[in-house]
Length: 237
Image (cartoon, rainbow, N blue to C red; front, top):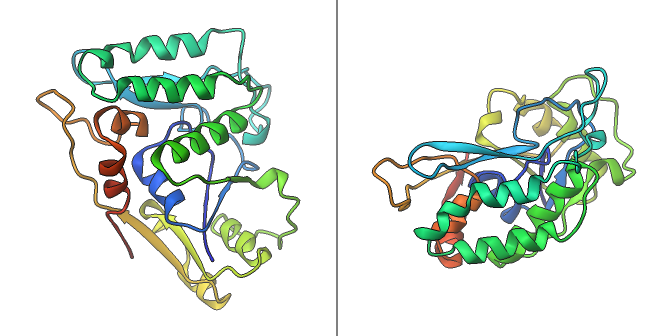
């Protein structure tokens, strides 16, 4: 059984979705410290004329710096759903799959969410269903999983995998190549690989392609078949 473990990102880039698709079990790791202005509460979409903008979920400011992701609450006093839909309305004029993406967002937004992990879990599962590979994602803080003490940051994934049955392979995004000590995983009998995506440009109806945007941008311009072909273009290193 292959396993992927990531912090719960908001409407993440295509590589994150590919990792979900190509692992047997995917865990949202939410017990570590929350860092503001990362990818937990925001992502990037095109602006109307050129460049990109953030679409963002407002959060309730917590006292102290030790708030874990699982305890980060959404500020639902602000009309953030309406604002987000307004920010991407300009896609309607040019993007062929605008209405499908809006239906997906409205499906997610029908529910009320108190915390950011719940929102991100629901949105990721909705995206996976839309793309044709339904997945039930697990949240680490709710698994009641007993793991060995962690002595270094790269041991969280290792110790989680050791506590799960039948894990044969742990896969991480390519950005973690320098972060993880492969020998620890090999010694434990759990090989680790890094997923390197072959990111290709697609037509955004503008002169300069903006790479690395939210999966929502990919879905605006491409049909399901083409997106799945993109998701399948990777190698393990």
